[in-house]
Length: 293
Ligand code: SPD
Image (tube, rainbow, N blue to C red):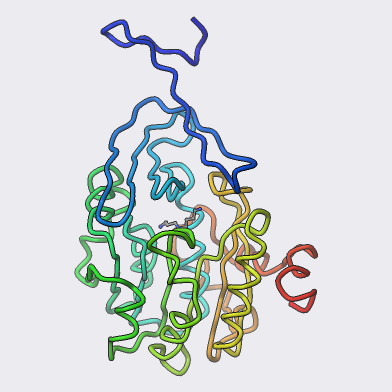
């Protein structure tokens, strides 16, 4: 027997791998030691796998959302980049993000008085609390409020105003598709204070170039300042991931005080990473803006 086949106490042989396909032509394959949870909620299929290399892994609608080992990169980068640029973020809205990782990072900022999470699928929050308690730890904080609702509908209907809105969505297929479209971006703009900042996760610069170009186009029709930034996330397609920083007033580089970036006990984010994240490879500049950004 080779090392990828296990025998359980009943003499059964286990040899499980999970492959997330990227555009049906490439993929990331992880060795699975156990399937911990597998159900279909009202909105999507939800799987929790125990993987040998990345630990527990949450898969929504067939795509890896978080793994225990590398979730910190995504959550630190979606939260601390905008919250370290805004001089006093007090009211923060996270759309999606039912695993809780983004909220966990948001509430590290002592200026935050209220952090609201709007998640469509309550089952994702429950699964995260059960299987990923370190990721979901922020849900216990008294400043955090959870609303189970469609993020686009919530933003279109609410009268509340926010300093920061973070679109911590899954991929633009299934329930999250609407969160990549211009009406949602316009509602985000409308609900932000005059110096508000909006950040959206915006997919892989290698596999999703058409989506990123479209996201960027939609955002520039709404926000005066739109800058893309990148981070290395091993379990996302191509391991290189993009985010869109959109703002009414603050520039992510000239309005950034590097002294603030080191306050949050991060494992990926720091002042150098903040600045370097906005340095885009030439091929990215070309498909996003024809080389202009
Ligand atoms: N292809 C994976 C994209 C996932 C982005 N969102 C992740 C949610 C983590 N809070």
